Image 1 (cartoon, helix red, strand yellow):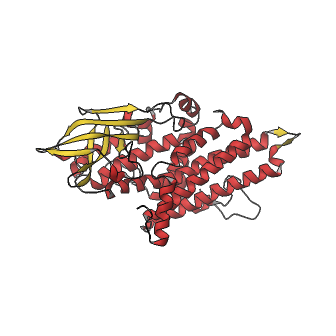
Image 2 (cartoon, rainbow, N blue to C red):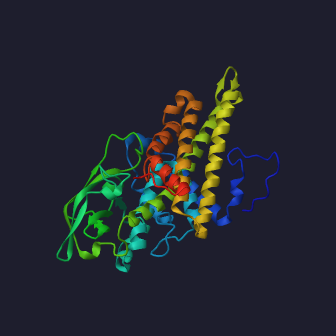
Image 3 (cartoon, rainbow, N blue to C red):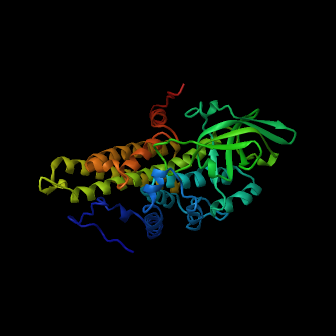
Length: 395
């Protein structure tokens, strides 16, 4: 489908800056395919899943068949899309729900990516094809109860015992932990931090689901406990030592979050825009009131700005010029924007804004987690501060 130039006065309130025209036919096809999947399989039931606190595991193989799992990786059954195409898919997934996008991010960027980037050929052949197909679910064990923003202080340890490794410790806030077939666990060793591929049926491995969440409810969040988990020597990822391993995985995930947050913001803006046109007070739609128009305009500007930022950084990544600091820029500003849009949309909807009949309160609650995970807003601020001053404020 070809798109002609935008003419003055030909304004689409859902694409004010005609950002669609910046995309290639292939990018639009991928975006539209994922949007349809979300419309058909996520939106009809997501309110019920959120309220019940369940993740629909039956969708995993469907997402694999669609090519969404590890889609930006090459080979081993992965789709091999561009970074921008992966980002656009994340936008559509998170327009459905942050929990759905989180699953795809964790599977592809946190569980599959380290095996793809740092694993042996045998490890790649064993795990990546079934993970890409959705036949095996992965999770990523880095964060601990006492080491979040400072992963170097992790206490989980792996020690040599003959040719084996023995792991002890625990990991916290692990997406997909209770449904995972394999965990990529990072642990301290005598040689520095190393990554280990841990099948979840290994003796001594347990996953405890974290309950009573009021955010990311349609997502599985777990504590992982490793009690004398014995692994063969070949379970270690051979091609990375130190924190650069897990931090590179987090950069992969943050890139998807940068795009995804725009999807959540867009869903809130569009819900508020439709509601304001239909809700009548004082005999007129509330969209006719100046204060409501200002709120709608602020939301629209935020969504368009966030999408432009994402696409620009996606193009940089595809060109090989994107740095980790750029990803921090996108993650920090887009999530901050999305939270503000969600809160503004909640105000426009009034009391209806707190019900699951509309998507706003669900996105608003989810974004409170997105604001914190894969690097808190404060940490990304300091990363950017170091980038522009050359001075680290971390120590």
